[in-house]
Image (cartoon, rainbow, N blue to C red; front, side):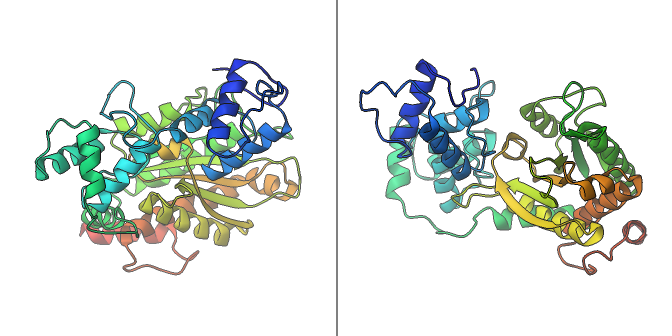
Length: 381
């Protein structure tokens, strides 16, 4: 679809307006001829929707926002749900199904609104246990059963204990862990570009520095792109899934029209409704604290988002925005190779903290690359 923004018109705009009205974000069309216009009120409604869904709040309807609008219109029971390998089904009805299965004690994986193989297996287990037709399809019979049953757990985070157990079983050593490093942008897309510095180049350099440190600890580090490539977000996520990654780390720097904007922020998968990647959230917190302390950058905290690189990855995923190229002080630091070394060390230490589960840990900002190597050697003996 074409990107829609203020000033556009036509049937595509009318469709989006109708969806926003159905979601209560715009009044219904009143026949005065405004139904085909992307006016300021519609832009405001789009921004409100994007904020609700954890999307980039730009007031523009691109493919990601359009997909989210479409997903928001589906309610559980309105259509049959099944696992389709080539074109996975997504929507709020899938999210509702995943949450209901999790509350009943079935491991449907991270509740992300995408009907994948793990959701199908959880659904089959539910159907088998409750004497339903075991076909992995959520139809009317299965929906009735789900609505009639009381969940074994209510509230909280049903995925948390399972994810923590996976980390515990993985052990505290980094050796053998497979980490996908995603340097943002690349190739024909330089990302932010200010005063001769390009985001794509800086993040490529940072990714290589992080890769070297990870390989030294025995981890397998994989890059989502080469220096002249720019896969889209979905391709980067699918690469991590195909490689069986344990973690996914996306590296970016930011920009803003105001030169006063500055600092570091980390993002993990999460929705306004509270569905989240618990390990992604934990790792984002570790990375955020390490980088804020080590670099002195302003701490802009961690945030849940539904960006494709966070939503589509099956492993815990974090995107970190390291400074603003549009801020003179942040830009000066990012241009310094020694600063990028500090960032790489901080991210490596944060990953180590995730697998330590609080044991034999050290205060934020004091754990060094040398400490990590000693810990790995000690565990090997």
